Length: 231
Picture 1: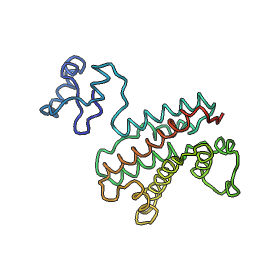
Picture 2 (picture 1 turned 45 degrees about the vertical axis):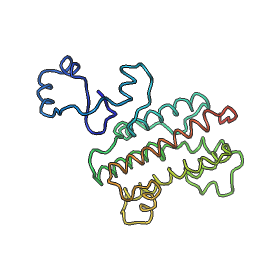
Picture 3 (picture 1 turned 90 degrees about the vertical axis):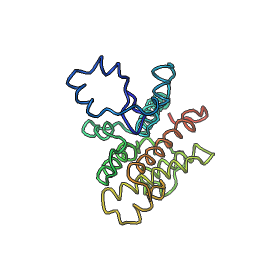
Picture 4 (picture 1 turned 180 degrees about the vertical axis):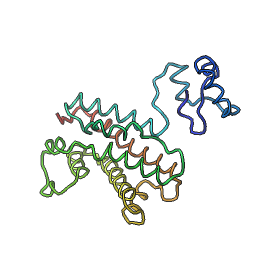
């Protein structure tokens, strides 16, 4: 099945005939459409050209990048940057997905899930333990602020600023999802991601892309830099 198309679910007809039970075939026949275009480039690369390819959909791209960084960070530095979710919270990650409707309810739910997976899971004690020159106000900073201090100490390029901005934007959106939306906090979050005039489907896609870019930054600027030791 090709999951990288945004308009339809695409599957080879031979696979549908060979592997789907007849009752399921009858059900999906009701929703069949005349083919438009081809498989997505990622599907063709993986299934026909034998080329490893990153997912294209923002939810799959985020998860692919997040899982890689989690594993690579643990292997290199010996600790988790993002604490694994408790069993009772695992649904937040498993159910994280692109929105299926332009719905405020679904937007709020998915923003909340993403915030739990990323911001609430920042491993604050381990981050603090690796800050070499803590500022006087470190205790008063939240987990994002403490991570910012650690990244500033280890990244002279200043590229960490955009990553931190994405985290703060997500935190602002979460404030609007958990409380009222007619607040400066929620408006600030929308401006951070540039989604003020977007419908919620496209808006959450943009949020996922920028949070995935944050995780990609951690890979390129921290994990791939042999001069950084956070073990």
